[in-house]
Amino acid sequence: MAGKYKVFVTDGVSPSGVDVLKACPQIEVVESPTLKEKELCEKLKGCDALVVRSQTQVSQAVLKACPTVRAVGRAGVGVDNVDVEAATERGVIVMNTPAGNTVSTAEQAFTLLLGLARHLPQAHASMAAGQWDRKSFQGTELNGKTLGILGMGRIGGEVARRAIAFGMRVMAYDPYLSLAKARSLQVELIDRIEDLLPHCDFLTLHLPMTDETQGILSEERIKLCRKGVKIVNCARGGLIAEAVLLKALEAGQIGGAALDVFEEEPLAADHPLRKAKRLILTPHLGASTAEAQESVGIEIAEAIRDYLTEGAVRNAVNIPSVDARTMAKLRPQIEFGFRLGRLLSQIAPARCDRLNISYAGKIGEEETTPITRSILKGFLYGAGGSDVNEVNAPKMAANLGLKVSETKQAEPGEYAELISVRAGQDGKEAEVSGTFFGTSPHIVRINDQWMEARPEGYLLLMENKDRPGIVGWIGTLLGKHKVNIASMTLSRSAPGSKALSVLNLDSDPGEAVLKEMLADKDITAVRVVKI
Image 1 (cartoon, one colour):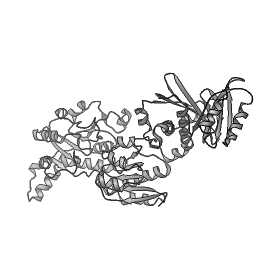
Image 2 (tube, rainbow, N blue to C red; image 1 turned 90 degrees about the vertical axis):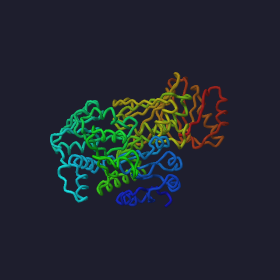
Image 3 (tube, one colour; image 1 turned 60 degrees about the horizontal axis):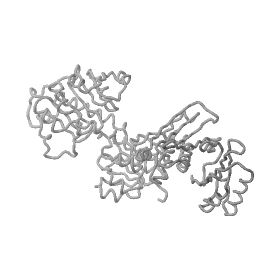
Image 4 (tube, one colour; image 1 turned 45 degrees about the horizontal axis):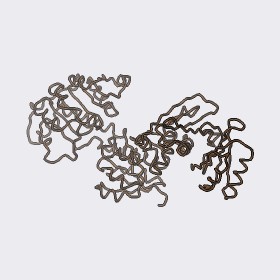
């Protein structure tokens, strides 16, 4: 299996998804049941990627113990079980499947909504106990009622469509949803949760779990609701604290609730929620349909496969997504960007606090994020070595106090496309620029000197007074030390002025040779950079 990517699959990811990975000749698949942290750390060693559902906890300890892992794929939407921050710091890409279980989860939420409206689980339990009690289970119609939705992402939008089909008025809170999108969904968008709650007969939650959303339906906000409001949560346990929910149910402020998710899963056998009245509980079944499991399994398998084999990024939560076609188109610029960053890092002043990347001409019309990240990776390579990559480079830059900016202009200048990178600190700056001649990348500027040099191997940068014979003398000196010159370019602003010579060398000449060069009074500076 030498040379193959090794993918560890656990948590019972669908066989269809596993088959996608197995069908790729470049991938070796290792399947395993859900493991505890210690066992996972041991089994995961040497793997390139990990694919999980919701059971496995991909902690900082797991990521630290398995440095070869480059990607984590979550077959599902939520990534609560993945330490995304730790993954980002270690340069591990985290991908999920935001669309695969959308319909299944929306249908689960709406099923629970119907169950609440008509007391279906309680009526069934009564019948199973041998009773015939119609009076106790009088329900309410959904038609004409108001449904409040917290979170109008994919799932919230699907719930809204179903509610409207049932004749409900739908009001929603989502600070990221545009008015145009809300209108297209026939939803009334409300700016503040406090202004939404008093109108709702039913309320359904479809928010991610973050520091801002934890406990978002607080005791104070529940008091703003209509008395007897019915609440559905198929999103994340903890959006409403379970103790707060129980208290409001007992007081009658909440007329009923249906939960598919809990603060801690599995729910303890003796948990007070199990004994509460007017409460429907299901064991996290939102995505538990054959269709959803097959869909998310295939989707995450394809994403992992494409990332490992093509570098394509799909549905990542800690790096911008780039499809395979765009990635292939930009591959030359991405690789060139890394080299420009490497070059600049070796000529820039120490402790730079700002880095500006400029795109001019046709490259300015492209999606440049992958190029920018590659440039940053190259610039930080000296600080982080092989530990720095496109995923963690922005965070590493922030930790170093390096502010990164990007500018674009579509109008071409002297070159059809030009990438320029400038770094500085306290008034001191260094800058490099590059372009393509056909398919061949060239460095065309170093600081204030314009030239044409190939970005490969060892570059000898020599600043000297422009005088006859100096180039020949350098060639003789390097030849004496058996250092071969692959190519050479000269730059000067005017005859007799300061000149810059850039030599592509096949090997590093070493410090002794550089000192010998500096013995010539007309050579003012010399350095070798490796790109």
